[in-house]
Image (cartoon, rainbow, N blue to C red; front, side, top):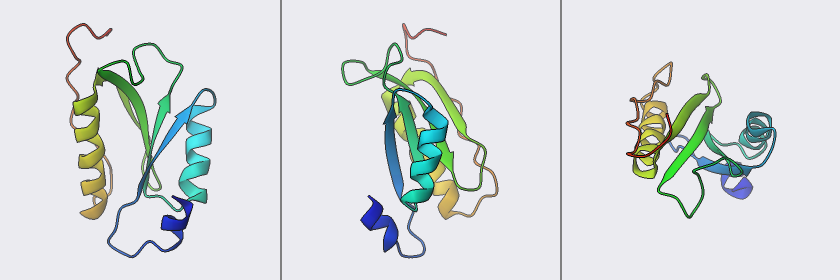
Length: 110
């Protein structure tokens, strides 16, 4: 990912993922900058209800010039839509990143 960030052409949005067990935002911000990413999706892999064995996830999406977007526990398809919408907002040059509200999955804790 670092190599891709080093040669990233204009008009491209580079998204990375950070699986973290502590200091979620600080570690993800560091990776965002070091790897020249436009977005990084940080996962607290120790949190309940997330991981490969679940259909749900909770993430924090960080971009260089916007406030973090916290996506609470929801269906992984909704998380994917929010990531794609956020990447599109960057391509469109929107000044703030406001994702659509995610709909909690049935059975997901509120």
